[in-house]
Length: 123
Image (cartoon, rainbow, N blue to C red; front, side, top):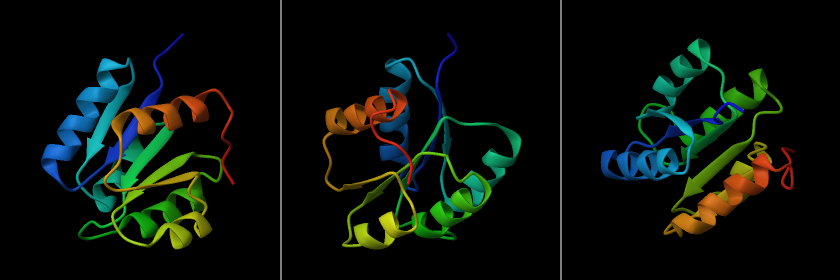
């Protein structure tokens, strides 16, 4: 069975490296983009099983990115991570899950597993 492919979108370099490393350690293939604009380019060149995006980013925030993803790939699961009170807007844009910062890495990994097992479906 091939590795599940995840696109991680996070503007904070330290968090991006940490999350990518943790997910790769769990056996996922991870591409990491530093903003929504870069993520759109990644999506044009490769296919993914899941997108994990931060909400607050320069150039294109996670809400706009989620809308673009859902317009083109309506069944793509998206996990949005936010330190703001934007969960309602993100979920309204059809993100699969919204996780509030600060978050527990193990809780994030559980959400990923639930999505891949089909226990959490895309809206």
